[in-house]
Amino acid sequence: MKSNNPSGFFGLAAVAAVASAASIASGQLFTENFSDGNAASRWGSAYQLESSRDISTGPDGLVNFAFDYSTLGIASPTGSGDTIGAAIGVNLTDQTGDEGESYIIYPLGRSFSGSFSVQADMYVYNDGLAGSTELGMAGLFLNNSAPVAPYQWGTEGGPLAWIYSGEGGSSADLARFSEGNASSTGYLSLGDYNALPAGTIPGFQTGVSGSLGPAVDNASGAWVKVRIEVDGSDVNYYLNDALVNTYDNSGGFYTEGNIFFGLTDPFNSANAGNRAIIDNVLVQVVPEPSALALGLLGLVSIWAVRRRQ
Image 1 (cartoon, helix red, strand yellow):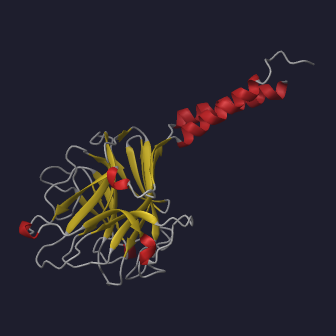
Image 2: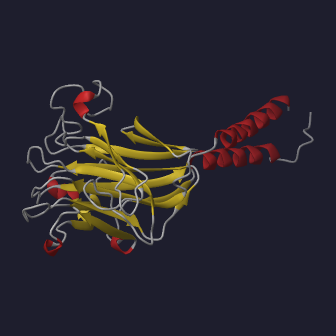
Image 3: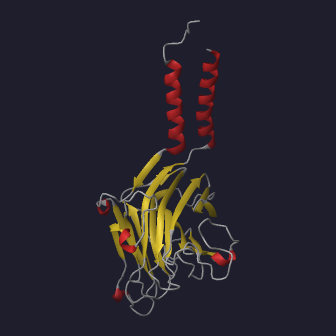
């Protein structure tokens, strides 16, 4: 029997529904892989020093937006062969006294709100100094007009951020910065790797005395997939797809702002060879359950109609 439907109508509708569902499920808002060597024109940086530091010494960190991390013996996390990423260093020289600091990088002019996620590959590289205490950072809701690099012993806070130790050498391997202001950093310790049950975070050593975190199989560190997801009033922090911590934003303290990544060292030390490497940044929409269900319902409806033809 000849169909009364216009030729190809349901085929086109199915394609459109599939495309719509895919867009709902994985709508990209921003990407960066640093490969073209020109990311310095698209990204900015900020730092914060220890509040009791002699300001005459000045900061002694670095930011390199076109760093070839193969020079450190680090392979691409994707196996693509491209080994260009952003590199951040802190406490490069021994200035004596209180010399801790944080450095962050952020894409210029970007702001995100609603339900979204940001993820990146991060490598907190340790050049062999035991207990060097560098912590990799990722965060949201940065004020582009007055960017603050969260730092435990600084004087101010603002954006929401989490940090993790690259090799378990910190007195708090996991921590969060939240609801900071002009006089409070908002720092909160989330504990040590050795206090977490074994196997809590894939690729991390936890649950034993002296846990090394992501450096368990390689003293210089390892790639970690860092992800933060805004899902309604919950902001979830993941390491290697394991949920580590949730911030309750039901009070609406955070509404919109930029993403950022960084490195912090809360202790007095010189770490000339250490770096945080950031690569493969992706910001995308987190679909509302109702929107995703609507897209799937459309596909089911089209399939049912096709079955009746």
